[in-house]
Length: 87
Image 1 (cartoon, rainbow, N blue to C red):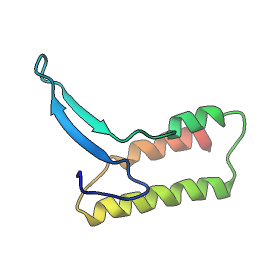
Image 2 (cartoon, one colour):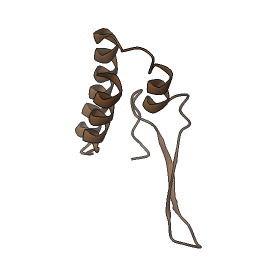
Image 3 (cartoon, helix red, strand yellow):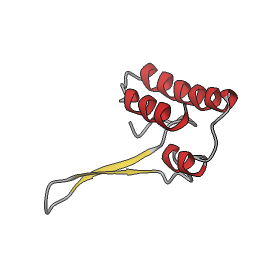
């Protein structure tokens, strides 16, 4: 997965296990914003259909890229959160 590069996919930098408790740790690129941060900033207004379409297009492009590399993502949770926050 470290070789996957797409503008709509967060880059995986590495995975390591804690020696003390065996926890799995994932190191990912730093993102300047997230969907949850965006939704809190924009909670005072509804998104336009054009904004929703733009967000969903980016999600679709990222998922299509993952699927073309035989990777499945838990996308359903994202859709449910987006509907609760934006629709």
